[in-house]
Image (tube, rainbow, N blue to C red):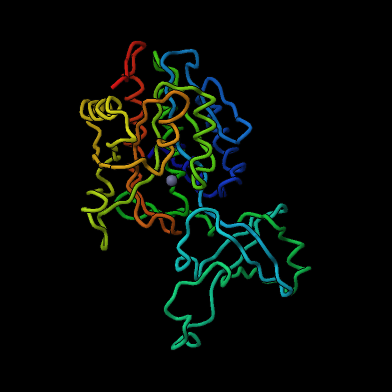
Length: 353
Ligand SMILES: [Zn+2]
């Protein structure tokens, strides 16, 4: 991966963005977009919209959600232990034994989440069952509630400790590849399109609050009023133990971006994405989704009078854990696919099925 693009990806991953608390990561997105877009704006909901050729036709929206799952400080007890509630979908088993960060107003505060030692759990009813959020606490090292309040306020966001690790075969793991990889892909596509002759107007959007019900895609799609919209998100890779292709299809890390097909997807967009991929020799995988997807493509499709929606996904192992694993090659191929798709859209391209 190109050095400055990799730096941008790392910056996204190392900056916190639980849903509703995306402001820090959107500053990173704006700094990138300013270098590569004709226009950058942030709407009142917090979506960052970066446009190239904004007066062109048709209008194409590319959406990657920048929010990540996280937690929020709900209560601090007398001893300064912090109780949190989830932002988005968590597996509480995965929270046990984690380093976490409370993003306080005066700076990050490091803490840990755990439970009592295994020696004391053996034979008890707690041993076998996953804890509830009310059974878990964050320990930041303070002695009292008053001391805790010097660092942490009610409503502060909490994440796993952020970071980025590179592995063998261009693979990498991090907290929040869901869906900072999507935000990266749409912004990198914009860079690839910069300076190219375009019929279409392109709006690359770093959307907010996807994890709480696709809320940023709703509002940004309404504002942009696109004819075509492609969401980029992660999807379940089914190439590790325990996954069943009969349920989720065959999806492999490193085999290229996944083009979705099904009722949430406009058939012309789906065909066009595949044609472009074949013509430009970009590897891709096809996956069927037989219902409205749980992605921004869902909100985009039914915006206003309807939008021709597409979905391009990055194969992701261990979704919503602190070790989400992807292939950086898949990310690069996805951004090329989007850029080539946009270049193939002409003023008279008709997406009516
Ligand atoms: Zn996602």
